[in-house]
Amino acid sequence: QVQLVESGGGLVQPGGSLRLSCVASGSIFSIGTMGWYRQAPGKERELVAAITGGGITNYANSEKGRFTISRDNAKNTVYLQMNSLKPEDTAVYYCNANVAITARRWYDYWGQGTQVTVSS
Image (cartoon, rainbow, N blue to C red; front, top):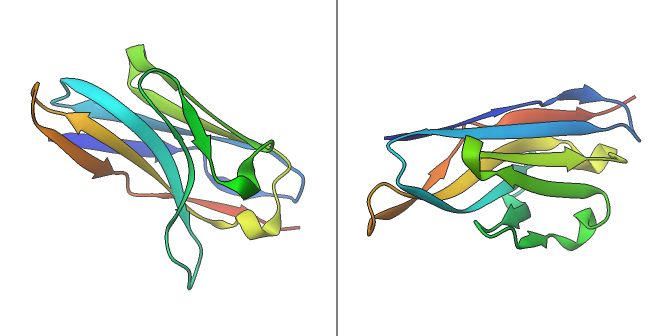
């Protein structure tokens, strides 16, 4: 069993910053791509940013330049630094990871989500 636990969400004013963290734990053989998704009320879940095990990153267009994804492989942790936050960034942010529990068995896992609210 693998668990992803997010932290770092909260209420922030427009223009402010937050740093989200997600730690993977459990029966982990290896971790591939890790990513952050978000879901605003009444909207579908969407990709925010992703990072491969080798550090290659991918961002949704609207987040380029404002958000930075990074990871610490030794800690099985992925981060999302969010700067210049806007009210439209308000959403539940979910961590996702592609995890191998054995050399040949890979599965996608999701965290429980952390609320980010951008409001004055």
